[in-house]
Amino acid sequence: LTLIGGADAVTGKATGKLSTYVNDHWKEIYPPMPTARSWVSAVLEKDLLIAAGGQCSGVEVNTVEVLNIELKQWYSLKSLKLPHPLYLCRVTTSDGYVYIGGGVNAAKGGIKRYWRLPWSAVQQS
Image 1 (cartoon, rainbow, N blue to C red):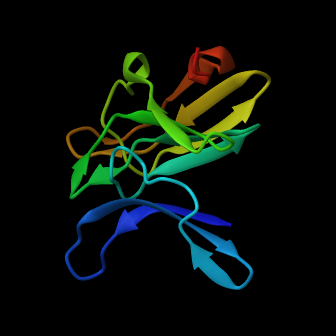
Image 2 (tube, rainbow, N blue to C red):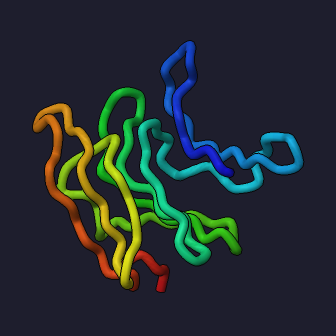
């Protein structure tokens, strides 16, 4: 079980920390996300953790970042930014694709569409 991102309950400041539950304790065994954020959505497929959207101190982001679990290294998908900054979107994988759908955007409200990325697009070359 790994918790990804979030916000400080007192200050509201977003965090990029990943906290993993190991042997009855929470540990930070992976590096933090490059973009600190709350309300982020993520999926684990093979050895990659894909994090999309979220809020950084109350502002929606359109970033998609990937953690290589084996190497414990993050990389950003700069060429695959979401078309709108989003938070509360959903991420899943199926049949060689990554699907990012729904979410909320402050200017547009609820988003009722999804984006499909080929699996090859999220793998670092």
